[in-house]
Length: 149
Picture 1: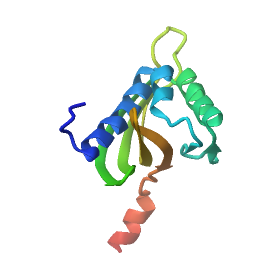
Picture 2: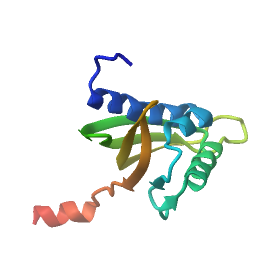
Picture 3: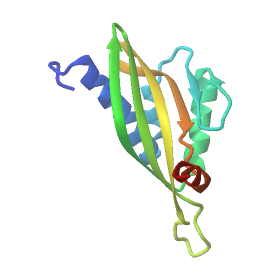
């Protein structure tokens, strides 16, 4: 990171690095992005996970059971107040199902999740303090029918 880059730019880089680690399945690098203190995480549909052990264990499980995942981040907004920063974004996720018997990747599935990532400044740079992801529910055809009447 350039010493001239702003705090917001550094937070955005840290936020991007988080998703890149997930894509690569790099558990060690992902672990290094989190604070050593009390951290929390909410994956879509999961209960609140608290503490470094519980949070990192969840990512190890996700990485172990995900054949392929790619994040396209949109609507990224970063706000910095002192030594705390908030990054919000839409995770446009493309993931691969379990490998088929032929060894080929199973069907690809798309999903939208809105995420809030909270960072704290440390002597080693910005580190994750909390992650919260919520699924974006797709509009149903029934809603469209109601709108047209």
